[in-house]
Image (cartoon, rainbow, N blue to C red; front, side, top):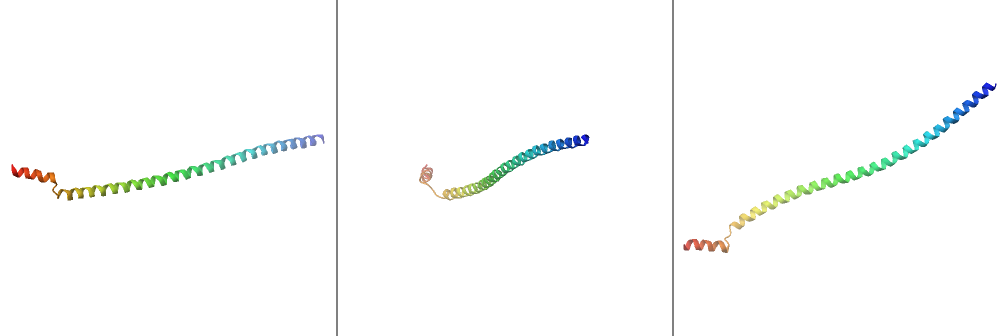
Length: 103
């Protein structure tokens, strides 16, 4: 009978050790879950920042296209204005023409 008592005591000690280890594992799992939650929040913030950068980049690209179109339109208008101005004789140009005729 003493052998049975010893086996029961050994089993109790083993179960107690297992319970302690399960509690330790539970603590580690809680720490892992907390760290995963923190990483999730951090990744959400990074995702929001990347989306903001993407929107800014798209806005900048649109503004560059608008500036290119405006520059091209301005260049065309400047060329048209130069063509219109070339039809006028200025005072300096008419004096030069009078000197040519006098010579």
